[in-house]
Length: 271
Length: 319
Image (tube, rainbow over all chains, first blue to last red; front, side, top):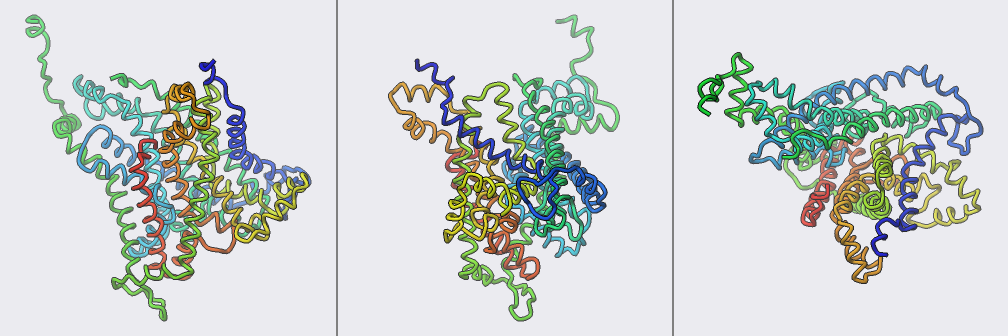
């Protein structure tokens, strides 16, 4: 029967899809194996033995902690800046129509559409021309620039589904702009902002290409990892850090997924 | 009706009191004022700081470097662009574009079955599994992913071990002995660079292809089969043309990301340079900012043409 067709999955397709997913995930799982290996001079597989001692060694490393702290600080502040700028942009783009609207949405996407090295080198040469010394804030400046887009994307999708008449109704019923924002807009876009913020945090926490140009001598966690990748000195510590980074980035992604999954039930969307 | 008009409050409320209320009223009457205030901060940041830096960089590509003193001459010249056409620099550009094209092609081939399965056959829980199965690798750390491949491709690593266990080491050695793709070991061969590029950018291809495939009505495929087309013909004549905008949208990412990357070929690959590495080297130790700037214009120009073609093919609807 022809109508059965769509329920029967071709075997070849199943195998190809499963192989593709395996290709995406096996390398990450391998990281977990290496974090426990007793071998510390090479990347030998299979590991000659398993041990937990590298976790203790990593825990007592001040350079790892310093890099981690810097990364968390930069990511937090970049996320806050991106949340403010991204939401403003999304609100303006989705609620109104005006000349140059397309140009602005392109401008927001540009920092992530252009290769990171271009953003990095142009910021660096701009800092040089303006004689701004490298600091914590030069890193934040670079990160916030490309974090805006993820917040914007999440917020704009939600704004589009939210009916503009909700805001009008709120204003008609006597709420002022702030009250409308607090009681009508925020509850509707809250989860989208949270999800966008988490993705922005993950993006900033992991960024290395722009950071190499804007950090000067400071080391964020990715910069620390890059050093180890180019010149491996402490393989076991790198293994442990890599595993922890995988685990830590999985959490916001899972959370962002569960927050936006039920995003279809937005009030006023049936307009 | 008359009762309501007589007893109820007037239909037009009095103005809101206080500064907040006055502001709200002002914004309500002049939406353009609110729009202006909302757009000013993001435009200051992105339009002035970001675009300003980009233009400053572009400007520098029209300067040149004095070959004897190493000082940057701030006069308009096209000499630096001329330098891009030197055989050694042209080699870099061709190598990078070839790699980007191959990576895009491979990513499309691997991504298609995953995207097709997720779009058409995965239901309920499996849909979530596929979605997260693509999102987790997409968002996990870029450097950790490269590190994982350093572990995999290492001489003493899992891939060589696997080949040895299967008694297929001769295959690997044979491949590595080939002139263009081979090298001393996988981690210092163009094959290694290619594998890592495909792995790292693959999720960027899967998502738009899946989005495009989800919009293909399944009864089109059934109609094609009913009208006597073989599965191969249906794929070529119905599915592929409809999925193409998604593939092109994905290729924008894989192509652009490969063009600009300088970390992957630096860690896994030969000493032959890619565009990103050339930019990094010229702006760093060499101090030749004009040439570095001219080099960055190459991927931008290539992507500009690419985006224009993609837009004509309708790829932006699939993003």
